[in-house]
Length: 155
Image 1 (cartoon, rainbow, N blue to C red):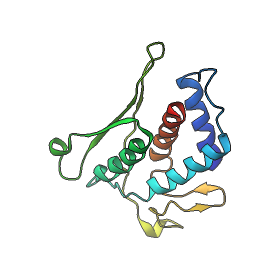
Image 2 (tube, rainbow, N blue to C red):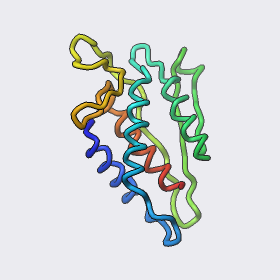
Image 3 (cartoon, helix red, strand yellow):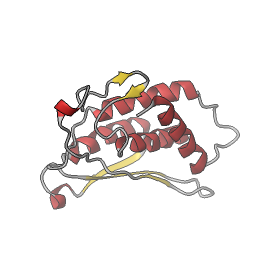
Image 4 (cartoon, helix red, strand yellow):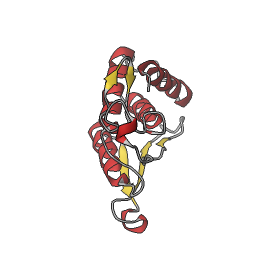
C-alpha cells in the first residue's frame, strides 16, 4: 500500500468521522502518518491466512494497541467460530452530541504463494514508497487507517 494512500485514507476517515472540538490539540499529521505506517507494517507481519484464519492473532494485535490508548476493545466468539478464529470489536464512545465510532474490517487474508512475491508476503517491508504485505490493500490497510483515525480522535 502506498504510504500517501494510507495517509490520505487516514485523513478522510478523520474528516468524515467527526470534527474535533476547538479546544483539542492540533494533530501532528506527519507524526500520525509515520505511526500509521509503522503499525500497518507490524500488522502485515501477523499471519492471518484463511484457511485456517488465525484471526485471534490479529485481534490480539489490535487489542493491545487499543488497550494502550484506553479505547474499549473486545475479542469475541473465539469458541463459536473455531480454533484460533475470532471476531473483534472496538468502540470509541460519543460524548452525547456525537455518535460512537466502531472499528470494522476483516482480519483474515487469502493465502500467499511466497515465490510469486518480490518480498516476504508477511514482512511488512517498506520499499520504493510502498508498504508490502498480504492484506495491505485488502483489508488490513483500511483497518489501520480506521484504527489510527479512532486513536487520533481519542487523543
